[in-house]
Image (cartoon, rainbow, N blue to C red):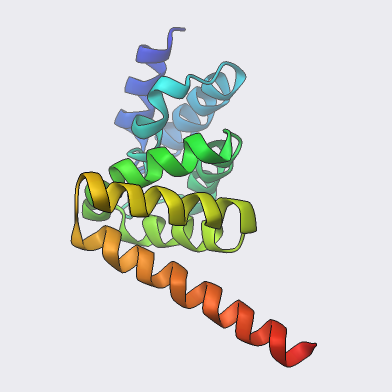
Length: 147
């Protein structure tokens, strides 16, 4: 099946209100994962929805997103975070925290947020950037204490 059809199935079944929808979502995600398309990375992020009835299945999507190159995945996340916050603030927080807990992803995140703030300032970018700075400072402080 082509990527557009798979993306349509994922979009239609992302709330997973029935077992059939959950199965459709899992099967379509498995097919997409076999032949991922970086051009759809933003669209893949936007499949996240806090109204989803099967969070463990949705975590499969998180793991799929994390399988992409860090720069590309984080870049797509930064690009769509204001939009993602509308339907998936909890999933946005999950991705944000996972990025913060990976040193190379965190560095890319900080750089890409600074760039986003220069190009398209948005209060969310400032809040996320502040969160990164606090996380980095906390790690530095903890490192000094344990040395």
